[in-house]
Length: 504
Image (cartoon, rainbow, N blue to C red; front, side, top):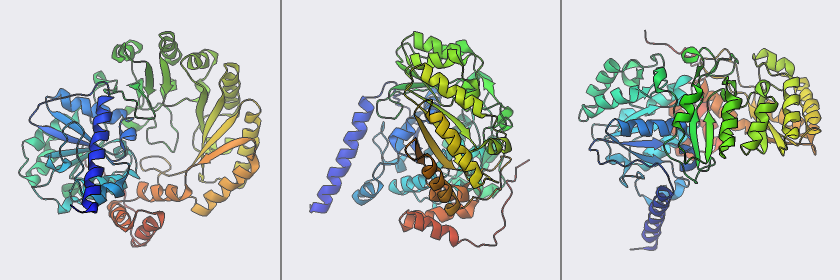
């Protein structure tokens, strides 16, 4: 055995040991001897995948149906794994992902397409659906991305379950395990039996409406707690699904799946195990739950740490913030989104300066260490004057409590009122970020996501199957920004923008 082979074997031994260690530190891992098993793949590393409530919910749903679900994740070090030539394996089964009849994948957002491609290739599965045969696993994709624009996913998926898959996953797996030796028959049967199944090989660009699960299945709740995520040993549970608000940039606005569905107070607590020391309350608009302050108070009174996925500043009051502080909050995190009152009004974001000032005052009054405020840069119609207003206002907030700004470039999503709006431009976004940094230097901490990768996300969010195929070219070229730019620029410039057609 040469040194290269020895190094590769050592690497894969280390990866198996890492998986074993992570499994040993989990609470709630499900085991099954079921004959029918699914490789449940998350196209980002373990820490991200195990922070996904949807991924954990589908994991439990599959086990609850009498089948087994063995998890797999994108490795933290893809080049090293590729160099080892070892197949990507599942944690519970310790089997190559390619050995499974079905690989089910949850995709949260556009840039995870690269992780999907890497994961499939590391598993020895052709990433393009058209290149797979009956000897390859059936690749079934779902996840949050299906609520906006899954067309870039289409080249890589045999089928896509649109919307909420809490129920449709069972029918889909019934069909697939009954047709494991005939891929075409499986596609036809899925299209017939699952109304929300998008079959690119049969439907082209025409997609079915998104599915909505029955209210009695709510809330989604976590299955596994682990110390190996950012949400360390936190039990996750929904307080609501959807949102009642109408922000123009948001995929989960009130028009999506009937608006906001509230989970009753008693139902939430019935799902929280007595052993949970930390509880994460999840939803598109958690703080809009009518009893949210009472929920947080009870959790804090029980001695549990509390985390919320979103805080609307206009919902904050003395009682609510006091409960958050008792539940362990040291940083009050909220969002304004538009840089100015004018911008917020233009996107139907009802946050006003007075709401943010009050939030800062409450955070200080209850002994929090700082406030973090999320904003968007590059909204349609934005000007330098809007950034100057943010400079002025954030400076004022910083006199109340130490302030950090998290800035993301605006990306127009399909199925929203701002669908079709252009990206502001990499240079424009970078210019405004620099204007903001200069304006608040020494007073406010500014952390911004990349304008370049914001542009990549925009191209995919507004794109179709051709853009998805371009991702494959970018990944194969090395995956750097220049590779993505080159792949997108190689697409025909006169290609018409496709409407998101819906199957009637």
